[in-house]
Image 1 (tube, rainbow, N blue to C red):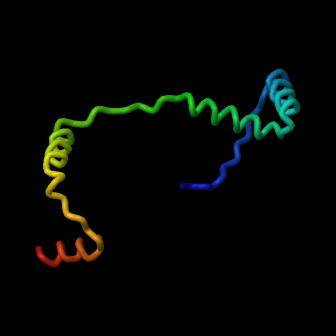
Image 2: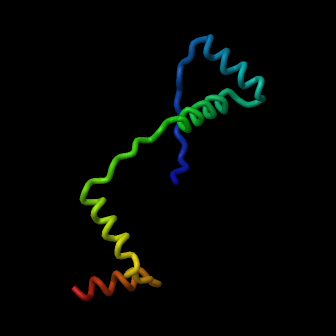
Image 3: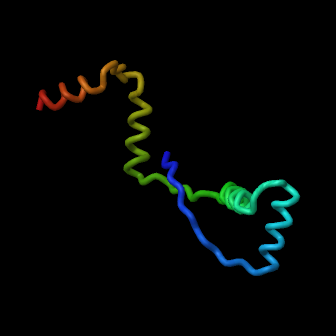
Length: 88
């Protein structure tokens, strides 16, 4: 997770600034915290698009699920892949 911070600078009308100032005063937090909270709440309401898998992916998924009883537990993935490379 990227924890870097980006600063933005915005211009507000007096009316909007007074609204934010009043809200921050009631909550006892800085205006910037109110703005951050409003952005987070808006982002939580957004729905992220979902896409249907392609027929090829759906077929591969169905085959994998049908064959899951043939799955093999791999304890050391690095050794497994190294052996695959050496066998070619």
